[in-house]
Image 1 (cartoon, rainbow, N blue to C red):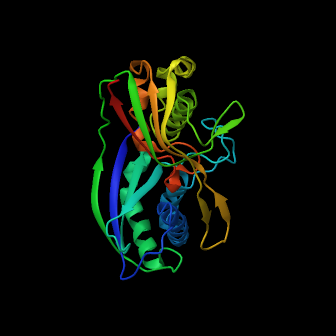
Image 2 (cartoon, rainbow, N blue to C red):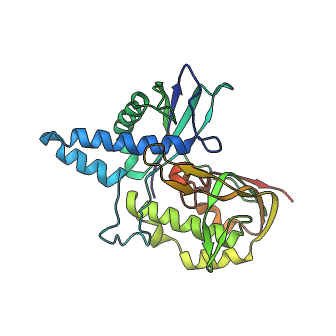
Length: 285
């Protein structure tokens, strides 16, 4: 298993921060990547820091060029996700929530440094220099609620490119599509940044098969269209996906442990951009 740590930072400016209109954390993810590269490049010039820089690259800039056995994807799972919200209606202040997984939780000080560099290099389309303040830092104890026969999942940000049987689900998320992708992501994070125990302890095939017996109902929502344009490279990227509420009905005791991770790790593609953010609630029917 892997640990989870939450960090909160506030970014404030005298003017509108100029973040992405639909998904503000998209802007922060781009700024984070750029600031991360700057920090690593600078420290990489100092011989005494070579080993630390190599560690940071392995944790925060993982590559699958050598064919990592723990992932079938070209891009390895990152050990963090970014989420957040405006704290003022004039959009001059934003609370950035950073969730770190596994060994990344040991490098909070490094993340603090990258966020500091982000603030003075500038955020948003106008490269707005910001005041930043670290607000909180704490480890997460995963809740373990008693399952009922109904689970409400609120997809707060677009859940991008969940695939099954050659189809991409963007307007409706069946449980037998959601659960396998959740399993894949948790197992990959655990293999790369945790103990690697889940793959040995869980019967992955049985869990995915059992998901076929859980019914799904769309409560509200559908496809949410989002496009990202990098402020530095001009690269365009479609982040379309499902946003809204799904109600699942069935026996959830079988999925009790794995579902504890759903509200924390974000699922689907572009999860580090803030996509695939879910909230869960067991309800009575």
